[in-house]
Length: 268
Length: 258
Image (tube, rainbow over all chains, first blue to last red; front, side):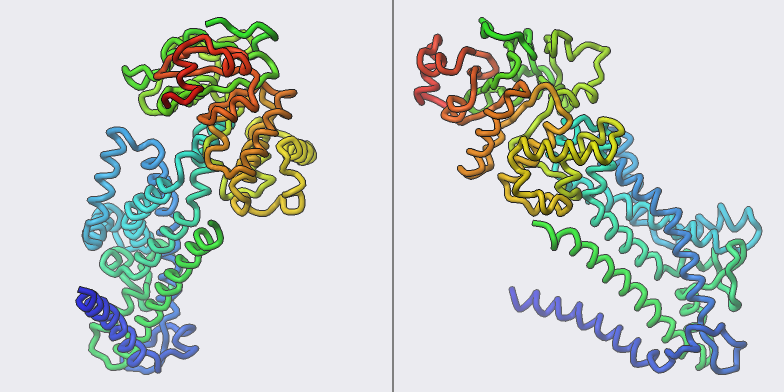
């Protein structure tokens, strides 16, 4: 039995190492300063970078976080603190269904309600699609984290004459903060790598653009376009962009772990 | 139930019944708590003594299905009157629980100041003064004065419980309710808390729930014996322990059950 689970976990780690190794082997040589600060050059020429995609990812994911984090955290707080009734049950059910919804479906939704009425693809629509993906995930992790706070703390605050809303925010949410922050970082890491919802919302852009109401490039879209393109040069850049994307996700995951340690390592 | 004779009642329960749904946990209890005295509530587990205590600061109604009938008079005013805001009321009646409940994200100072801040705008200087006073009164000052701004959960269990007492007395309530405050402490921590009860009664009216008979005998002026939701007997502690009026009380304090 021990041998079997050891073998299975080895397989899991092996796959991960294979992916990472492959990425580094094929893409690392293309990572130079130009890659980070130059924009793509016309097809057929060599050189160029993905500065537009890096900035685009930062803008789209940042905006998605700006929209999604307050809504997701607020929903989670509501579910944990007031969600014992029928409305809470409905919200929880919808969040669970939305959590399991394929991201491309969310993309279609954003296309139908944002891209079509506006008449063209926009970074804003992409950010909204990503935010919609993030909200149910955040809501459920926030709820779990808040529920972990001992009931005795709530009673202590109420017995001290804290109003209920103040107990929720000042005592309960603050105690659960490290867990909530971790959930946020994991959520952002998750949407940073999403491609499908951006395909027909942000669309992609070969030029540098910071205009929210115009198409915008992202790292994931860049990887998709370049990897499926016909040019060797593009394939090279796709591998490198994939490394950058992977590194970004790794960075967020590490930050999340660090946040957890701050909470659970230092106390008790 | 004959109330203790001496001193005006600071807090008084009149025909209090506490229920969960349709099940009565505390039945028709009437008792007086004179100013500046310690009253111990004793009885076997599940006798409703903690539930009764939670009726005295309207915490019972926060439990799912919890509700109360009867009156609780604080300075002759019914705290269950429709005009009373339970949040304001709880600022006049402090409570300390069985397990220490310091707020883990707050420093020692902020823990003690928590009740002051929620009580309204008080200047930093006032807070500093009140926090020091509360910590001195709870006999914790000397141990924490050099680390007021470090985390409260680094303290030992006994220190945490004294911190919770400091937090409860900092806003200067009139009554302090203690719900088995030494249940999770070692003998040293227990002794600290018991000495505190003695000291604090000059400033507050104290009601303490305990399952420890020796503790009740040591620290209280009056003792009330609860059994399956009924108040069996209440009287001066020395009398109740030496000459109990009721058969059940005698059986309990001599260790024949419970």
